[in-house]
Amino acid sequence: MIILSEYHPVLFENYCPRIITLCADIMENKDLEQETRNLSTEFVCIIAEMYPALLRRTEEVQTRFYPALFKMMTEVELPE
Image: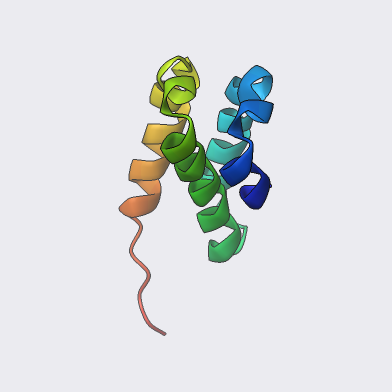
């Protein structure tokens, strides 16, 4: 999906609110691997680069994605 979003971000236009919500849910889930959580962040960032107007029109970016992103950024992993 990430490669597809790079070349054809318009395909996700009708589903953007759902996709943003799904990505935010993945980012907030600490039971998932860190790589999986990072890929959901990368997906949204690629759409932001390729089709920024789409994310500006999507309310879920401000209400779900940004809080999940900030929460994920403040997590501290301590070495074992």
